[in-house]
Length: 277
Image 1 (cartoon, rainbow, N blue to C red):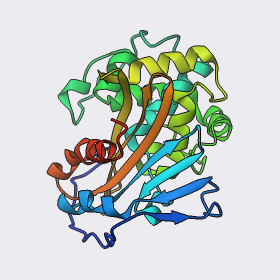
Image 2: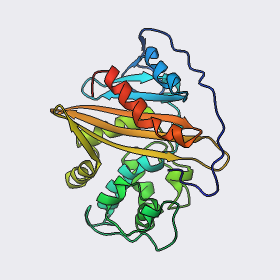
Image 3: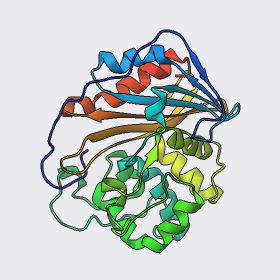
Image 4: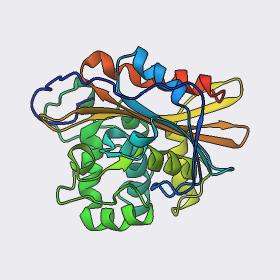
């Protein structure tokens, strides 16, 4: 979804990343502060075939190893849009803004861009359809002081909620890179975030998408941008393969509604090429 006021302005941007065959190994001194960084430039063709500029990161926390497609963009921060519902759900639980994943939260009663958002619902239901007004209601309950505290505790992106409590993940100033998102997803997948085990278990459960060949996929999409600026689509989560966690994050430019449908398609194609799902 585009979480902004006004109508979207679609402007096609060319994919400038070169698709060089083979694998390039980067040093541990990358500005991301990550461990081993391995770039798979050969997989950039998957973005090119769909005519969307973007980046993909796979993180193996056991080896502290990142595999990237378009490494430079992987370090660039963007708004998290609805992928922030992952962290937002954790913060809502930890602060007591909601008692559990089944408590029904009012949406506010006003007309919404999406008719399906015009309903009071629980976090369990709201996260599936990315219900913006429900999570905005939670944000107002949480408040900016608590967000400043928890974004710092979670080391989430630039940690900046700004001054508008119910828009900062949609319009900014909060931003996060694909590398940071993959590391965050890995920590949640391993239940190693600095929050209670209860909150992490609940959020893991509401993010569960599917099971394939014994591997469990947990993930959340996002789509947002500010009027007149480039729209960004995101997909982040992890695969649990018998306790082995492989976390991932994707972001790409969205210039048409059709581009938004490419998020999971591109992501799943790369996960398949990397042999993890």
